[in-house]
Image 1 (cartoon, rainbow, N blue to C red):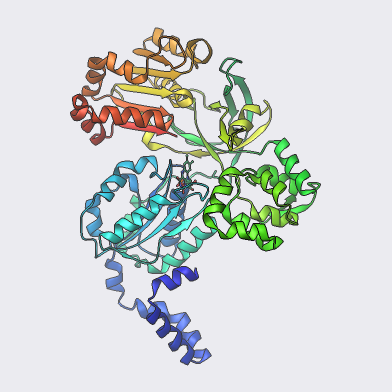
Image 2: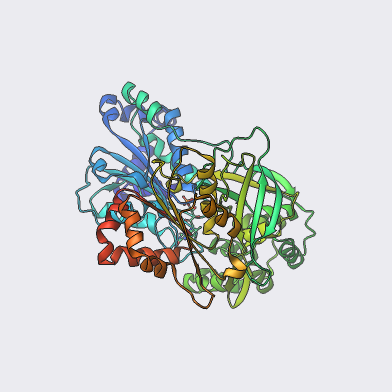
Length: 572
Ligand SMILES: Cc1cc2nc3c(=O)[nH]c(=O)nc-3n(C[C@H](O)[C@H](O)[C@H](O)COP(=O)(O)O)c2cc1C
């Protein structure tokens, strides 16, 4: 927090404060510490007129959680504040805001979170004098990415350019953001105006956020009742269908289009490899999040055993006093390129640092939850959650590596338990108008939420959507996920149309080809007010939307689609 304090004052202001404090007696200092806030806010009527807003930009819920905590603590301390999702932000609101606190993450390759893409573009093109506005940015990110916290940093730079006044420098948070976020909240709570009677009522009525009892830090344990392979054996990255049982009397309030966060566990082989490299038995006691447990459990359930952070390497160099490590950790560029090519096991082989078990645990990144879309409607099947999971593999320094969570899920045995929490994705729900036509385009496991949509539609007699489904996968024979279910929906008339694009079959048609071959029909549906849902890999849909939005024959239709919020993206 020293950084925050010093960036609030100029050097001469800070010297003046220090000199004043030096000249005071202990009794005077104590009195000042207790009464400073009252003196500075003695004109409460003016303070109360100020409007403060905490705005979050999120994709996986972390920024929302922090903004929500800020908001709740503010209410608790009788401070006046509103909470807004940046995705719903209207820039004309800015002139009515005096204090703006932004919590925003970075996704993709230095991109904004998906829901705020258009608001973010609008902000970067804004040309307004914001000199009345004081603001602070808390940027969430992951230092293993090249563009660490870029979105938050860019928002900060843009607000500065528009003459808004930063309370402090933009604060960057890594994946273990909790402590910094708590400090950020505590630091800024005193800068909020006090609540008035008017906004007390308003705050109570308009700012209710749906909170669930289950979260990343307090997950729900569910039993895996089914784990079957959907794709053919010949596929290198198999796709599995999982069914999880929700315990009786548990309400997760999940709607078709929502997802869940899964807390994964590391593969036992990797844990054993780390134990044998460090020469620990695994029985040593360590403390994680104030809970004592054996080292083996901490390694399996709480620590990232693949990626190593720069902070970890610096810690190791301080403990070991190893000259090579010290040299490596001092040169940022060499360090970055080393960390891109080496994982934890390489580091343990190359630099056998004499760490004790607790030091090892404390130096590792926390294992992060992963989000999965629900593949069923809890309206149709109340006590189950279905997932469609593809085993993810990626190249790391020339070697094929398995994704931690997808490997964990595809290998999990029926009867075992899994830790989950709900993840609401309001922007990807079915339209509120129950007659609107819908076009669903899925790439691979992106089909999961569409299975949930179809179950929702078939179990809700009020929903009368015409549905056009376009699916993309590898081959017709091996990877036509949930084929019989789609055929049944076609037969029952619930699905109006089904088109497929199999990228490895001989007569391959891309999604774009399918749309172009049926251009008039596609445009007809959109002109009739259809909602367009895109779900699956980001690169495929970025390319598709880029092409369609720039085609002159689509310009008017596309503008209406986005302006009327009928384009829904669920991409990763
Ligand atoms: C697919 C993906 C891409 C990401 N890309 C970046 C990135 O380019 N830069 C960065 O600093 N963090 C990146 N992150 C990390 C997120 O910013 C980080 O997990 C953050 O806590 C997410 O906050 P949110 O839940 O509010 O979206 C990425 C995360 C994911 C899942």
